[in-house]
Length: 309
Image (cartoon, rainbow, N blue to C red; front, side, top):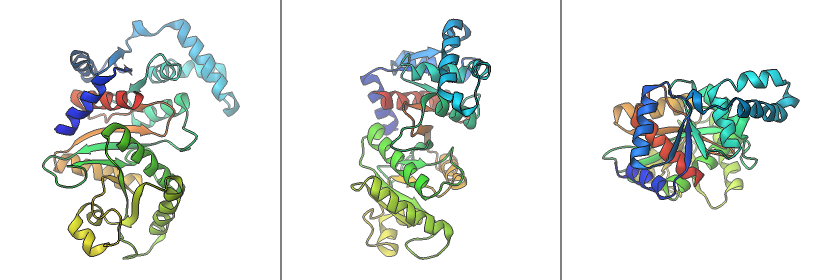
């Protein structure tokens, strides 16, 4: 797929150091081999011999300093640093690596918690979320079949402000990693008043907040997905929309919709799903589906490396 190759080529252009903290997983080891062979990034495969006991103790002290006002004591911090996810995240925090990618053998909540607690949330955005880069073969929609879907992994029921932050973060990623101008659709079962309900009110409020955050961003909602991505349908349902049926960043109203949507497109349309990429943090990291392949891990590493450039 052309976009996947483009992502890998951009990762090669300026190598970054990415940690893989799940060396016991055969898919992770195979991904590390591919990444090093293709020179997509410098990889730290976090095997036991790479964990320095003195550094681990120092990381625990730093973690305690960061979170002591939230009831974390030094002993609890030390126990957390026994987890390789936290060790990897603290390495990234301290600049010993540029990002980390995990989730082949850990759940999304485990990966997200370690990332949020160690890397911290970007003050501009104030919330962590996630997205997938979806590359759909033989698809005329989006940007030549490429989309960003968000949030598909972290926030179950985002409020209006959170939904705006998800959209803002996903649009930034589209520009940074994919190098295309984001065209953001806030999705719903309604297109501009064709139905009414609390969730629709929330999406309308989110659009207002998003326009305050990024006045120049091309964004619209609430809208059904066909009105968002199919120009012919947009001309019928929503002729005045600045998106004109050419949205390439799709913002789902809640986690259920986002997670179901990306998996349907991945399985039924044969799409390549890169992610979930965790958004809104001070440094880049990516989660993985526990059903991922080695190639999925390679793609996540490449996207994470670009974000760190």
